[in-house]
Image 1 (tube, rainbow, N blue to C red):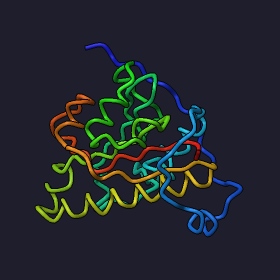
Image 2 (image 1 turned 90 degrees about the vertical axis):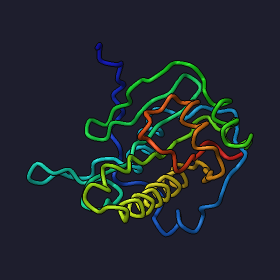
Image 3 (image 1 turned 180 degrees about the vertical axis):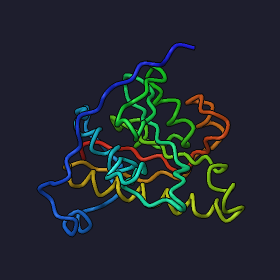
Image 4 (image 1 turned 45 degrees about the vertical axis):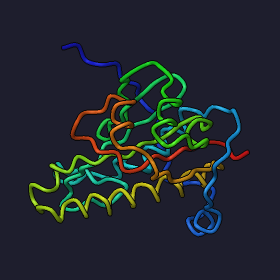
Length: 199
């Protein structure tokens, strides 16, 4: 099987102009967005904040969000006008999964919520429960949900620091999202996060 196309993302910044305290104070749910694309640098920063590598030691990688047992059961997908992508944290690349605009299909899966249709990008956080339940049993499901919260908060705060807006979407049909994005059966969607310039 041929290797899918991959896009190398720009190197993320580890120092910005907005303090953590300011980002927390300014964070609000943003549901309306300008018709303005995000740069690859902005997308790189958002995905790095979600699951990026923040350090390595003894052959082990550390990521931006904590994970029970460092098992990292999450998969991060990106939907934008020019296609569907999967984030590859270890190489900080995007794997190209499709080249169609799936935002309308994703929006329909999310009960027609306009933010999903109008945002230039949507970040989808999925859990592969088997990666964590093998060690922790059923409690691993809780750990995956906790991790999804860490990831989502990082995305929201990073969006603020970039002058962007975002909103957490939890009202959607899991099955319809999986079908719309043609996700692997084990990838269970937990969050949709539309991100863009506030209107």
